[in-house]
Length: 150
Image 1 (tube, rainbow, N blue to C red):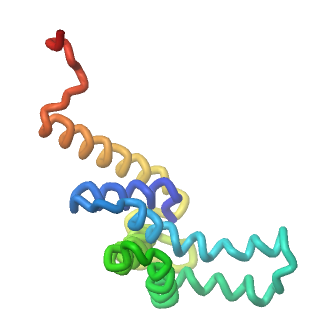
Image 2 (image 1 turned 90 degrees about the vertical axis):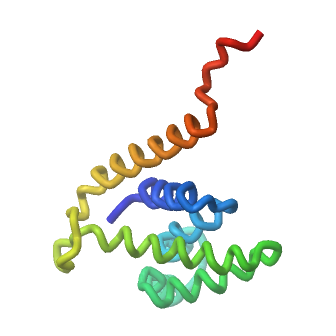
């Protein structure tokens, strides 16, 4: 599966291409299934019952993750409409990225990479994001070199 940096880069690429103002909401949505899934680690530091923490692993499934992302969007009451769109969209993007990897026990026909080849996606997304930023910078006329200023 793609690592968190790849998920974040994918959200930033989509945000740059679609000119999203609140990039953080899309990034939150793309990380949400993994973050909710890791809540079982709270059992290490607190006295939360183990049954509750094992229940959290169900949030790495599509429908529970989308429902959780819609519920979490209500915490952003100042930007509720943006949050109701961007956080679930980020969650969908998370599952689209996870669908590109093959697993050893379950291999969908559309998967491109093995689960331990996350670095290929990471490298591709880093190049794509840097390319998008460079194109935007040169399109705006800001080359970063100000030699003619006095």
